[in-house]
Image (tube, rainbow, N blue to C red; front, side, top):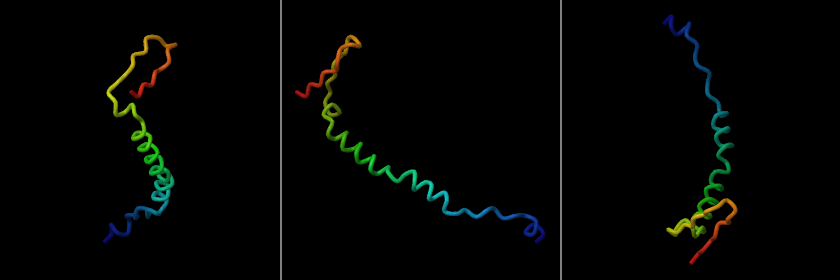
Length: 65
């Protein structure tokens, strides 16, 4: 019984943690959708072709065929 009188209770958790998490993750689904659309519309992801660049001054060539 004496332990109950001398031991303090931990502070109660409020909704501050939940609100901070929701504010940080508010735009995550939108970013996920844009990333998924970009991945599905990018033709280079599904092709197994690559072009070697010999020098830094050369530009990358995008060949879809």
